[in-house]
Length: 207
Image (tube, rainbow, N blue to C red; front, side):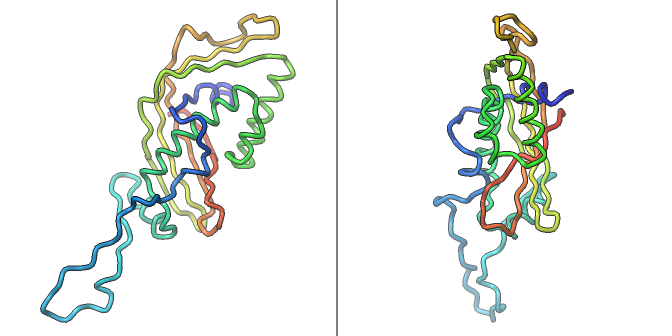
């Protein structure tokens, strides 16, 4: 499947105006404070009152735990909310050909491919329209910390419709009257030791 089809089939969420870097993986003010250990009559270990790092379960549990230990701001719940927002923002910006919006949200490699696809479409005077019905699923399916790079994979399932028309309004591909089931894995990453909290989209593949 070529990059244009992958991008158009990517679906979208409900929070279009939210930037990826504003919400992905950052703890918010409602995060509860760690509770002290209960009192004991016996001697206490030296670190008995030290807050424990969060632990997560599931197939991505070990990776999420490693990321949270390296970056205490990371919160998987907030990350998924941000990923949904990024899903919408990236797909709709691509459909409109807004490279300036895409630039801070994509890795260098992914941006180069998206920009090339946008330029090719503009050269043909083609216009793409995408309509979103719903996102059925946005779920973390994988995570790892490789050296200083944190990566999180999110499985998206969405019902969408898309079509492309030429400058005369003639249909080139797709059909807004027929929705398709988008089923993809998006991979986000960021340098864990960077002061920049931004995550970027580093890969898209069909599931």
